[in-house]
Length: 216
Image 1 (tube, rainbow, N blue to C red):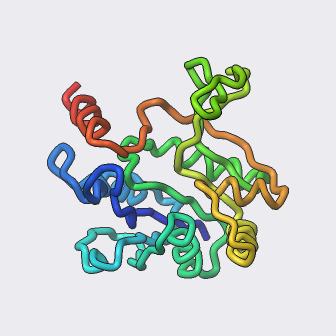
Image 2 (image 1 turned 45 degrees about the vertical axis):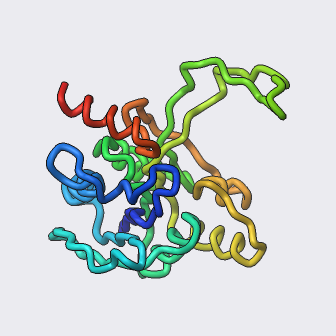
């Protein structure tokens, strides 16, 4: 069975509001991810992770789905979602603040894990020169050819990701994405092709960019 965790529990501290519920092109931002996942017959069950005060949010989906309350950090929200996916072989994690993730990104990740990888992350090669900076001083220039910008969806072997989360929880280790937890345990992770357009709506200017893209 393939499950999907849609993360919509963000507090929007940098945005100033819960951006996943804001309107974009006549629907809520999180609805774009819901519709993409709904269109994929490969995904059997969906868990939508929401803030406590939004758990009664109306969601339309014909798939088997469940709403669960998120945690104080993204990592804890994913863990809560994992605990509600039982009898699952593969799990896809996606931030609903990325409304332009394509079906292909989901399917490529699933195929990579089916083929034997422990995980597959959506990413694209950096187009810009990347510097390491410490206290505003440039330390060095990183090799752009080996730098990837990481996004979601991210797809994993369910049991291995659950193990990585439990280990991190027991050791009070906090990461910014799930692949970091898997890397920490030595699991094999590959990349599937992402896109600059699959950006995360984090700041108000990101929402303006998303609106402009829809008008193209």
